[in-house]
Length: 144
Image (cartoon, rainbow, N blue to C red; front, side):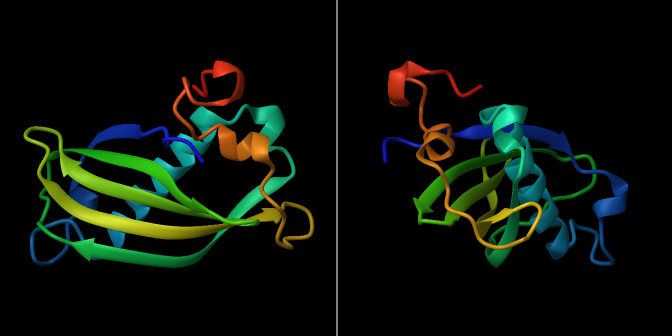
């Protein structure tokens, strides 16, 4: 596999994401990672190629490094790691927009499934290639 295409999504922490300790709740970081993954998927793969394919999570790993607070401007940066026959590692770093300080690192194993049967489904090379840098994708196609 060539160099992965890195996708970034910016957002501001809303009050609803803050816990009793006054910072972003740990489980919310997983939502941020999932939101970035979905946005990357939708930016990389056209709707007609997404039909019939769904994703389910097999595993999450997360390292919490620093707290985020209400009103913080953050960036979720995501890319694809190891790709198996029916699974794909997605890596996400959640950083402060100003200065780039890493707040959390997330690794999620996603499994491709048939949307109708929910049974595992092989990841077609054309789908996998959508997550490569444009100059490394077959035919130089721009995945965006």
